[in-house]
Amino acid sequence: MLEVLVATVVMAIAVAGLMSAISSSLRNAARLTDHDRAALLGRQKMDELLVATGLEKGVAFQGTWGPEVTEGLQIGWIARLTPFEMPPGARAPGMPFIERVELEIWWMNGAQRRSYRVDGYRRSLMTPADLAAVGLQGTPLAAVTLP
Image (tube, rainbow, N blue to C red):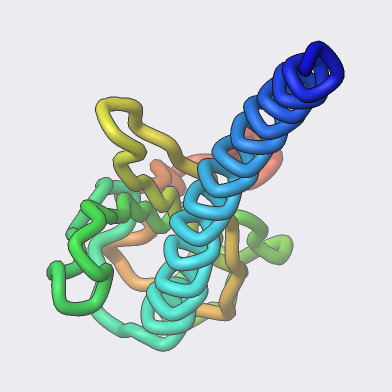
């Protein structure tokens, strides 16, 4: 009888430890699933931003995805276009330059907000608005440093 009691206690301790490990594994799997969903939507949004035209530069713009896409998870994005690299003498409209697309993807994990950032680069043509936004009009190129 004592042996059965000891065996039952040992099994109870083993089962409790196993249940704790399974619970932790399930939480980690759910967290990774949320991250993977956000990463997939982030790649899709970056592709859209890289081919989009007419986006305002230097100003943050944002959006969210609907629950039909995110399976009820609250996921959104914040993006900003900034000049990255300009060739020497690029002070006239129509000149090509490299533009950075900064994208932050965020999602809610319970009450905690999680996020990650990605950058993309694209070739763009200089417009008068770009020159004014960067402050290049009338400024010697050697005096200009871009972020």
